[in-house]
Image 1 (tube, rainbow, N blue to C red):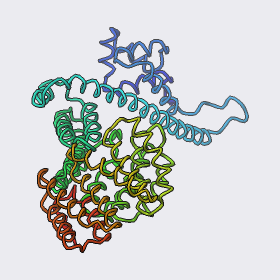
Image 2 (cartoon, rainbow, N blue to C red):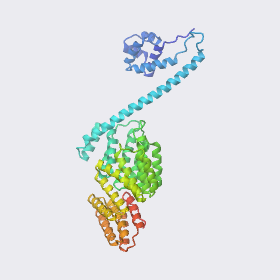
Image 3 (spheres, rainbow, N blue to C red):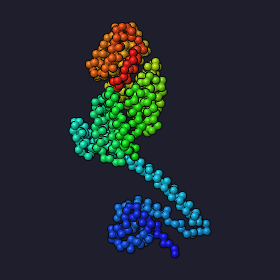
Amino acid sequence: MARKIPSLLGLALTGLLKAHGWTAKELAAKAGVSPSAMSSYESGDLTRERLEELAALMELGPEEVERAVFAASLLLPPPPPRTPVDPTAEEWRVIQRAAAMAGRDVADRVRDDLLREAREEKAALALQEGEELYERLKPYSGSARRDLIEGAPDYQHWGLAVHLCRRSEKAAADKPPVALELADLAVCVARHVPDVDGWRDRLAGWCTAFLANAQKAANDVPRAADTFAEALRLWDKGKDEAGLLSAAYLLDMEASLRRAQGLFPKALELHDRARKLARPEEIGIILLNKGVTFQENGNLEAALETFETAAQVIDERQPRLRLALRYNQAASAWRLGKVEEAGSLVKEVQQLAEGLRNDVDLIKVVWLRGNIAAKLGKRQEGLEVLEQVRRAFVERKLPYDYALASLDVALLYMEGGYFGEIKDLAQEILKIFKAQGVHREAIAAVILFQEAAAGERITAAFVRRLQDYLSNARTNAKLHFEE
């Protein structure tokens, strides 16, 4: 006895019922027809229009119907031969299998592309909403902001958490207290977002990393290290299937922390791992940070080489990164004695700093120009410019930058044998360090400088070692100066 084969549409209806947990009896009741009528539908007494009507009763749209019809077409047995050269039943099975595999591959690619596009569109919208929510939060005090986040679901938004992290990172360069406040608020938001398959922990880990970055900027490296350990714990515990948060960026932030701890090999390893995972738009900042790590470790040739690679991907559309890149390139070139190269770079640095209108950036440009002038033999001009820079850093309560600029002046004084002036510089640095609460290890280093100056035992090598030490000691209170 021949088996009765359902029609394509009938088989599609059966597939929809099974896939979405409906019984034929339930759908018959919903459609207002008898069970026997539903049975005839499944057997094939059905039009495409009627199939879509029944699907709508199950709250399914035409797209679900289309998929069901396609799936059913792969399940039906091969048709009987209609010509002398039609495939055999076995050949039809091979054809159907190939068609099924091809259909699946195409469907997977299309599905993945559309899913990625949908996620990207929703992510961009969420970040825009986060920025708008921050603008609504701005008028409130710190405690009121926290109350709103904890009590109003509208503010429990991952886009707001990410926007707060971005603002914290931007503020860290010259406003560490603001950076701390913003990052702490981001962590608060992250802890209140709706959780989806580990998303809350992953987001909290991300925001906690920015809190560690702000603590590092505030010269509390030991605390930052503890905070970053918690960030990594939460990150590893959580999940982010959509890839909304960058693992490469997290690794690069950790590299900057290890650099501040003086762990240069570890920092370089992390930079390299970050670059392998980086999105195209992240490569420039990772290379820039790696160059700074080389620079602070004293490997200026490697720093310049890395900065040159970074210059190929950091363009005029990223003025803040471009400024940092060109400034560090010029500084490394100057320290290597490549004065003409440094001088040509300073012109672009000046233009970028003026465009961004950040007064600390402008002061640092003037600082670099003063050093270059001195290297070019314009010693008096260099001294006058560096004196302006020293005063500007004192006014802005930037003791480490003040000390570093003062040590540049000390090197110029040494060339002229002005040891009395160097003694005065040492006393001024010590006075400012004590007044502005600089940590005791840095103060101890300046005292050694003062004693060496008083005994006229000071050397250029000593001054440069002290400069390298103070550059690193600003973020590491436990770092000891080796005389």
